[in-house]
Length: 211
Image (cartoon, rainbow, N blue to C red):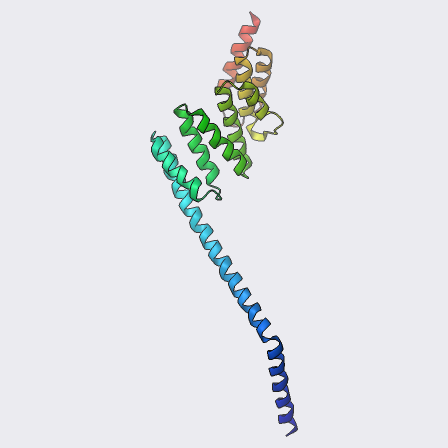
């Protein structure tokens, strides 16, 4: 009987504990289950968004290659509208900017390039967007703004792109010494195999200076 009494007391104690703590325990379990379920939903949604964004970007890039500016605008525009928080969005903005630049819509090109620059965490995309944006500013007869955008940046492997554009801007302003220095830095820093063109520009300026 003593064993039974002890077990009976244990049951009573358990009932008392459950009465005091059961609600909080259940709430805790529900919160955990909701958190797990929410995370799984969030992960699935992110994956779905990435797939959709990737597909739209592919369509935009293909349309750009085919010269279909309307399809570029539709596909890349939808990507930016619906999936702006994905890593594909800055690439869509670059694609749109290139399309707009091709039809001399420099204002729109500038807007998309600025968006890409401001909304990417990828250093390579930042450099590409910055150099293209500086080029668009130069095309709009804003050389000072273009050069300012290129200054104060560590370009890394993109040094040739930065310096070639600097050289082009300086050359257009008749500042041949600065242009030659920039072209020399571009040739030395080239990592993408485009130094032949820059070397021709450099040689041309050297010939002019020698006269």
